[in-house]
Image 1: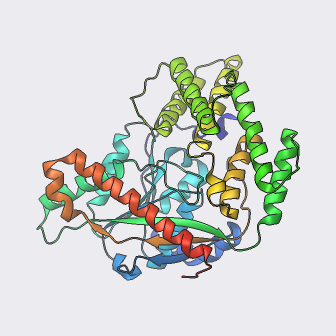
Image 2 (image 1 turned 45 degrees about the horizontal axis):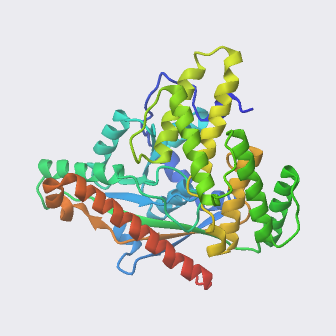
Length: 413
């Protein structure tokens, strides 16, 4: 059973918003040692590529909203390494739950500020709009809304980042001469590649899961992976009291499991969700409601909340997973993407330690000037926001595909 502090709350309801408090001497010092520190501690090094029309220098001095896919928990570190290359401070829109203790204090000094995901966080929105109107600002947002745990595919982008950027651009144009105001959105694709042989790591991880679940280790690694996954799906359905459906495939079973968990939790907590609302937004709202309720319950009422906490976190863990992800491209990265999810489920480890040394390939797409979209935004805000959001998502996915092709052929940028 997880302790209260491990559920994601920071235990400080008195501070609803954490602003950035950049300390330039501290920031510069950490930028200087970051490549060595992150390579040795997190086993990650950054490799930067770009669209042929983009040079790294073109970003320097510009006001930019950097939108990036979010495959791992190490992505903010990769973006910090990019800030180190540019020798500029970045701001980071960061989950509220990260601002606890010394870690939260440090994050604020490095440019992070909080967002309560799944809620209308007016303080964070107002702060973001103000930042985007500043000169030479660099703001990092991960528009998938959370970590996907998938190295090659992008989850649907939320439209909030584009909406705030266009709104800020509109305000900038009102406050300055048209030629002086600029704000760019830069699509960034991030993909990791293990640099060594990962066969022993995959084998050891599989064996550990097989022992914990009591399943056979016969067959090749893909058959064994599917056997472990099948056992976990069966167990999750049993815990949710869902009767087996022999006609359903794995994707249907996972979708049914997630829908059942969210519907039950919302009903228990008196919450409602809009039609088509992303699962992640529903999860975040449920988690905030659970945090609020646990403070009013007697200790003997905590067990029911623990069950709901575990259930909705399972939805986040399996949000982007689908049957066939490994079979479509059986790379070490895809095997380990899936195994890490299964480890998180079976062993209750939020962030398993690095499996090996990785290169973080970061591809910078062509900056998009929001001045070019201002007239369309004034005429039709909703369609302009949605179309630009979709365009950014497609660009990030296309550049991920280019990175996948290049890394599969062993190209070094």
